[in-house]
Image (cartoon, rainbow over all chains, first blue to last red; front, side, top):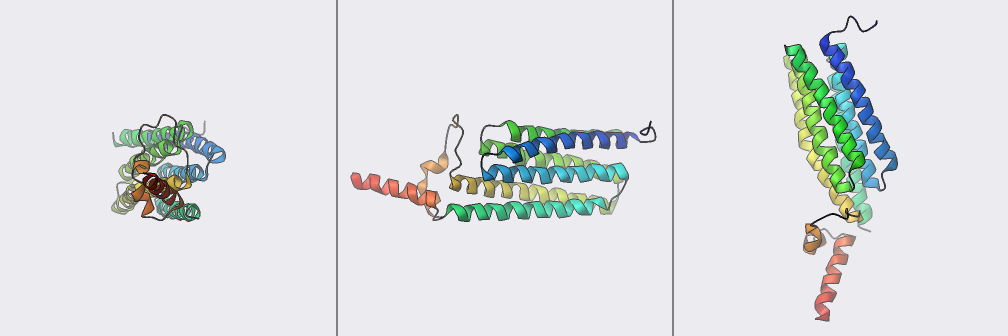
Length: 95
Length: 132
């Protein structure tokens, strides 16, 4: 088997990545279905947060600490995108 | 021992993400969905990054992970609040089983923002007073 040389932590990281994949698929279903625009924004925010978890699990799996820089950037960009979308929606509601 | 703790933290964080996603899919209302999507996912990212801290055990990784945790815990409530306010202004319907809508009982809180919905609530209140 290919997984024999992995440690306990790496097995746990693989399991976590699998669970996070399912979670991202579920959130994507809400993103596609969401009846209103704020629903889709919420789902996108959740998917960005799930990607932060994926990066954390991947950093543990591959022993690469450089990956955490990507997590910082994604946290920043997802907050900016959500706030910009909220401002845009509010301006649309004022007219 | 530390390895088992890291493994538990990683899997538990992933499970919390899954719970958050299922809540986002299954809850009946945007405002209730936001409850699942913001709080549970912030807690889950904190758990997973704590696992990363314990796994590497270095100062640089610890500082960076604590930075991400602090940023997520600061910005998740702000983003949720802004999206919820924008959705309320847009007139997103509330769930049928909603017990209380405090913003509806205080139209002056909305009128101060000069939004369409708030002005409408203010007008209806003024016309109600005029009919008296």
